Length: 472
Image 1: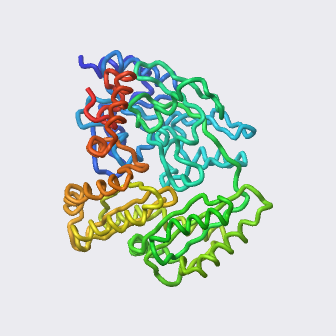
Image 2: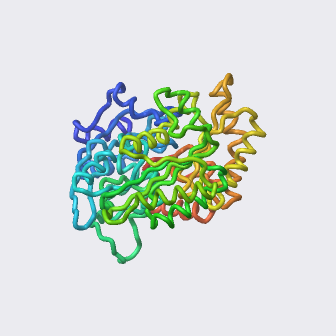
Image 3: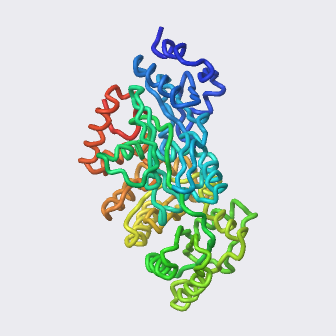
């Protein structure tokens, strides 16, 4: 009898699914670039059942692949093709355990969908500021395991900045539980940070305590046309100063990205009368009802237009119009898929160097692949730009993307590295970026990561083949 066959009977049978028609939905990554194999899907209902799964698999040396909403862009939640791994989906663990308005905190199971946790906070008159395009399907455990970013990083930070406490099942089945939502706890190492961004390679996050903020009483959303991409940092600086640091999002959209979207979605409309090469989607908010954010934003826009930094712009006059602005930004990835998909470069540099990066990367792409469609957009307020490349019309998209990734993408990543940036701003490593981590990651950091992995998971059973290059 093989190891998996010995493990499965030891588990509660109502959490085990071997039907391959069901399992198959969990073995392909979000972008449908990689498909693995698993003989069974395990769906525990609570932390104790996760511990039982991990103990049984540790004893039998069976590898596990933790999975939240399976929205990773780097195949972090996808099993290998060997069929030797079992998938542990946290989807049944979806309870809000505690919501403390006085402490501005919420504690929840790791399997809760992000949008559901946002609603729970909203019902209490509060805001969970983590906001992603996939929030209707991604789950909080996966958000923390990948240290998710999103559109509000500028104001509130990455996912790790919102974490007050964690509960994690360790590779031997033991439980690390430090869920108390304290804002000050200086009692030794900040152990919880080890598991945030580890993509399930050090343990399975089963619960989390997160910071909440007060719900905004005023929100201003503006769509601006800017003259030069070099002016982005100056516009952001002016916006931060004039609104009293109230800017929550500062998103760049290129005209090319907007054109791709409008071509694929004729129901969408341009927010401004005339096209421009560069746009900014900016949002400011405050929990104060006394401050006049609308007046500050109107004066800001007038000053930016008078200086020539902004050539046109509009401030949303209704919640629907603001939502329409955001729909433009959020649907750009879908438009790229409509046009055959894109080669994605999730890059971050200093905000002061972002324009220079985009210009230099564009030059590389245009010289190596004339006619390539450059879809450039991103959370430029925190230096994160999505420099995506779509195949020219009439060219085979799969062949173009494969050759571009092999021949041109390394030059773009090396450019980011040479500018003091990173090849992974918010997508993580997974399986897809292992070679980049080995080549462009800080050697001392990778060495420490290996030591931590060896200490916590010496058998290499937690999400093998992800994040840690050449482990075991």
